[in-house]
Image (cartoon, rainbow, N blue to C red; front, side, top):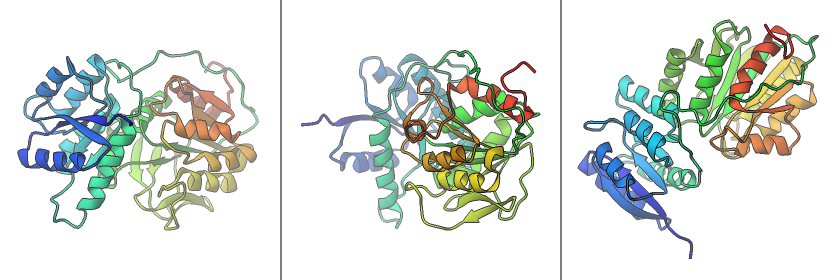
Length: 354
């Protein structure tokens, strides 16, 4: 018989804590190791016990969820699922920074059992806890949440005759922290428009976009129909619509999910393959599943420059691995090497010094 997944619940509200215990305890996959009301109590438990996954509230008495995440990932790395209410901008910011610090995902706090959305929210929470319990997290530096040392930049030179015009990026689990590092590495003078699909809970999308604007050199915004993408901006796919490029402008498509995702990275990459061909760049970062892989292969087949994050720096190697398996990846690079490569491509300098 397979061992049950041991869950540590951290939630200061007694009512919500009992609700979470009911949700998690009703699922045969889980065993509740403990349910505590503070981050300090959680850290004491981690001195002697080893849960498989932690359900962590954001707004806590004393140490908040962000500081708790930093402490946990520095001292006793454990998969963390942030369970937060969409209360205000401050809470959204804490949740996003917790992802940057090493939490794996953020889900909306389930509402009362009589609410029509309860079953769906409860199921999503349990699914995330089960999936994230399998992720092998490692100790992170408290400064930037890094789990790796900078590796030597890839040296394969791109074709200097190509003037790249558009960058598409797809990320899922572990994406927010990877995106911040990559975008900061690009710097404020990066000259290509950036189209982004990040799989994230719907209620946190606006907070995620605002957070990107505040933590990177770029202005991030939720993509709008018929917008003309310009350099220096990140256009983020909205919830429940695919993002595509059609006749040089952004298009929001209400078609069926692809790879169980809506928005889907494959839809974005498909459109870049059609619209800009060999002048496009596609990047697949950390994430679970295979979204983006088929689209990245189409970009690769048109001569576009395709990059996937190397397993050595991925929180979850699923999406990059799926793309590599299809032969869609020109370069597999560790995260610190992706931004230097993109900067070189954008100015047509290959892998040489600027």
